[in-house]
Image 1 (cartoon, helix red, strand yellow):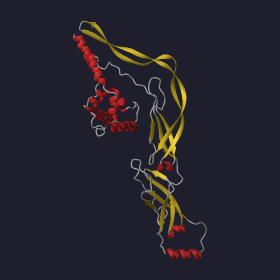
Image 2: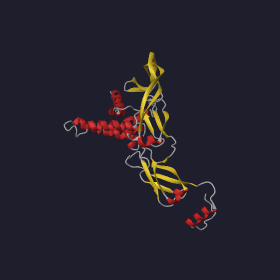
Image 3: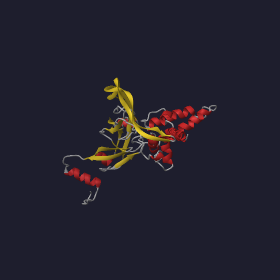
Image 4: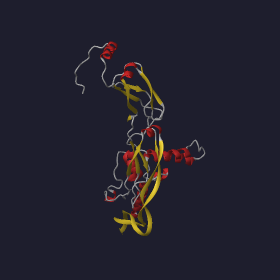
Length: 344
């Protein structure tokens, strides 16, 4: 009788530790990205919001549940704890624990082996984009040959793991032992599939930012395929250089324009003109700022960086006559400013 009660207690403990399947509750895969999890949560939150279901008590409970689940899956550390040890792992972490719930249970310590989860390798591909695309945004379609597995004839052992089994050894006593257990799965063969992926280049994206496609990476016979990441790389632009949300460019003017002033329109990345006007002397290396003429901010597209323009002055070549030299000296009326200094 005591043995049965102990065994029932052990079974209930296993069931309690298994907990709920958070990924199933949100309707996403275990490899889902933060963006996919957030999107699924918002969709379910709108569906089960109490204001939309005033007469449905189950909707209110569901709304509360998906909120709790999202709070854990949206947090990197809590999600790792959940993936390792389920809800009990999250509770232990929040309580400052993190110990194995089976530690020292019946004197077995840490002898229980966690079932290993397999996943294919992630694939990272450079996505070369123009500065114009990062300014305006764009959608691009990429065709890719992807390796994957398909079922073929025959079976194979799969999902092998170590499981604990209980054996009665006598009245009121039992023994727990580990056994290797495998499932029988269909044989697989490696093939290549051609697929089209649509990527969105969002305005303001920075170099190194990635766009993730879950399950589109390298396959694995014993688990889920890895993920595919496209990493943004900006191609060199002939006119503009980007630093953060700011743009930089150099503008060459003549010596005459540098001395008497000038007015011009600088074409921007989307074709609109940026007016540039100088009425005073412009020296080589002079820098001006055009507020709000930089790149859009990725987080807030209403916020724009600045455009910085550095001036180069093109001096005329050739010799000046004595008469011209005298005229220039009279116009400028400058004293000698010769000075040696360390400019490094």
